[in-house]
Length: 201
Image 1 (cartoon, rainbow, N blue to C red):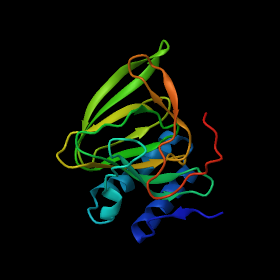
Image 2 (cartoon, rainbow, N blue to C red):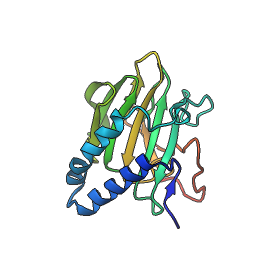
Image 3 (cartoon, rainbow, N blue to C red):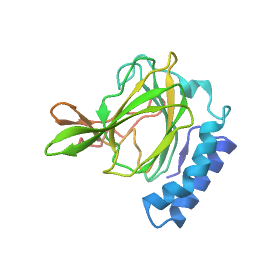
Image 4 (cartoon, rainbow, N blue to C red):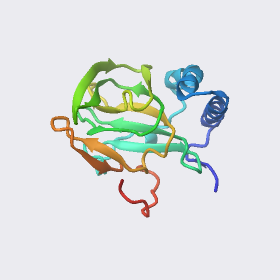
């Protein structure tokens, strides 16, 4: 088994190596996120490292709405992934969870984000925020792990996700924001396949 470096460039290699070192040297997810923040901010501020093909919507997307999830890197043991998520103008993701800690930031466009919390068997809107390029935040489940994003810019939004699972291929959940009902969900990646032997959780 080998790590899968789909976008094999010095920038991505250097970033992944720095992330792995930070995780190894950190005593908690919070500490690791704090250590990674400067490199993640640099990645979001760099206009040249992400090719246009990984910033493209996908009309036949399995996520619907033309949303494209493009894998850039994943660890062979599924412990880390880096990917871009492209949401066309006016489109929104379903309300969903991630089941992993890490950092999420906006690279292109603008978004509205709604963050939910599970309370009393249902969902409660905990926070609404506007995101602009360079903005990013930590996910530390269960805090802030359930959300929905909608693109508000005339062009598609592109966000960069660094999460501690193989996010596109693990079974996660979508939620009905009114009832709180959850359904198994696997987003997949546009550019790589998942192991179809996995069973829905």
